[in-house]
Amino acid sequence: KPLKPKVTELLKDNKWRRGYCPVCGQLPAMGQLVRIEKDGGRERELVCGCCQMRWQYKRIGCPYCDNLEQETLKIIEVAEEPDLRIDTCEKCKSYLKIYTGEGNEQVILAD
Image (tube, rainbow, N blue to C red; front, side, top):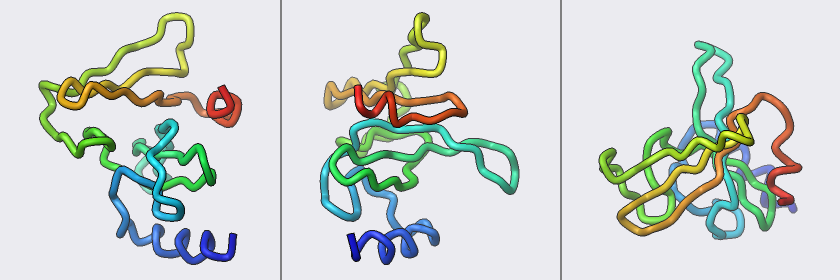
């Protein structure tokens, strides 16, 4: 726990853009699109399922293999869950659940 505040301060400068947690090293359990205060746009944050740390990551890119080739990155919309989508990577065959809503994603992370 004492490390988390120091890492959070470091993350404010956007110096950590890797696909694994800066606190415990685990891969993300999910992501969330969050609103940027200054321009109203949205950016993607990753969420660690182990320690609950959140950090910014590229809006387009695979956090598991660092693939940036847009033609191999797909988005699957979930009709029954309008606040969810699945980001997939054809290169490493991975996927990441993304919460796109404006509410609390903790219920989804627990799922």
